Image (cartoon, rainbow, N blue to C red; front, top):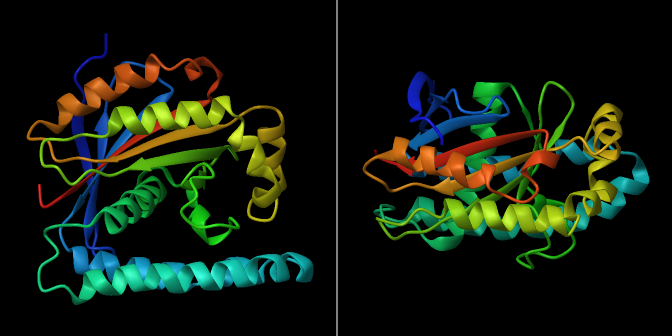
Length: 250
């Protein structure tokens, strides 16, 4: 049974308008937790917009790969910027929309893993997969300092009492069962160091469970989330699991 986690050190992120908080737990050494509390949604929307139009990751590829990704990345980036601009233009963004909420959870969680655990954040998958909003697989990816690729699934719910942690965990487990992490290899080989690909080929990979959090007792949610991921059928095959909750104004 999972012990009750505790909030640890805070990392203020003025650039993204949020605070990243370490969450400590003694339950399982391969489970890591952190929390994102967004204080300025408009600032985050602006930062997310700037992030998706940054095409420097494509410039590092060879000419053939650049041709493969340029069009997809540009079309998707323009579409995402429309979503972010709509949020920025809103007089009040207290009621976060579904699509904007999902992007906040995906990109905010990736940012938090970068800040707290020194991961490398990759461009969100929508920028380099061929079709947008087709649920082809994992939403985002990071690479930890051990050159292990972490495959992230993000879920958002706007209902105040709802916590989509189980949905995210079950979806991620299903994607691993369907070997969608290995299907991503054809793209990831252009995005990460060869050591990370070598580890993936040796079946070393991590999971990120990211979800919106509206609970009054977030530490209880994290406790339940630990129990949930430990119950997943593929838990023992996963090198490490990162659990990230994203809240607004809590």
